[in-house]
Amino acid sequence: MLLTLWSLKGGSGTSTVAAGLSAAMAAAGSGSAGSDVLLVDLAGDQPALLGLARPDGPGVTDWLATDRSDADALRRLEVEVSAGLSLVPLGDAPSWPSARAEDLAQALATDGRTIVVDAGTASLAANEACGSVRSELVDALSAEGASFLVIRPCYLALRRSLVALGDAVLARPDGVVLVTEHGRALDADDVARALGLPVCATVPVDPAVARAVDAGLLSTRSPRSFGRALDELAGWGDR
Image (cartoon, rainbow, N blue to C red):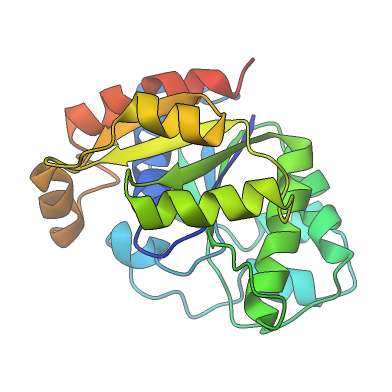
């Protein structure tokens, strides 16, 4: 099972959702191979979210920058986070051949474990090299598994998403992960109607999640409400 989470606007909560989903699935033993879950960090914030020291070795971007498609080499980059949960950190390579995006997607799709990819924010600007590279990865990963747009119920996020989906800038996601906030005028039905996509999971902004992140305990003591909110999303990838 390969799940890719991405957003079109910074601050949507993509990295926190990816970390929480990975930790919840590992703790519940819901991975495709027992409780084994692999989290792939394409945004760079996962070590901090999971309470890990900054990795000093190579990461997924360094693998992409080589000319080898060796899945075993990718596995050697993994860092153990907790029981049943491993992380492939971001790495330091600034660029790589565009064809390597498909190599990564195929390597992950055939891994056999549950894979969660934090793809971060995909830029719509053609002149932003980093955004363009990230978009290629989102498209390649989406073709091999389930893809979810992480969004908050705000006008600016919806507007940007409508532009991207309407212009087919990125592969159309399978659904939406909605990060809800108290006091917002828009709800899950509004978002689903506007985007023409199902809301597959609703994750409330929860102070308990912030406390777990601050204490470095998100991977071992993820708040129950967070895990419950992501149950439906975890099952979606098996459809």
